[in-house]
Length: 89
Image (cartoon, rainbow, N blue to C red):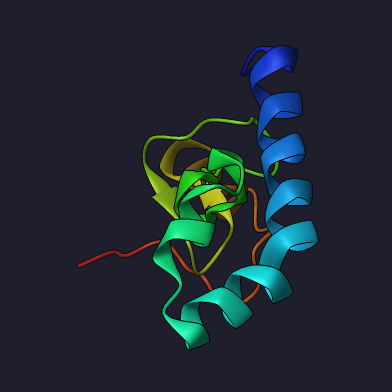
């Protein structure tokens, strides 16, 4: 499990991105990069990290399922993810 501080920091970044999304789009359309650089750094969507919804892990994240590879494997073997079956040949 990821540290609570990292999860909270990511939530804060996500809220900041949502707050400044319209303003960033407006400034980008005007090509006003000077004003764009004066916005908070966390207003950029690039700074938000994809994290596993169950464990908070950031590495090995699978976008399609919204979880890390380890959590995905565990859930798939337990039959918790519909449509996913274990390969056998």
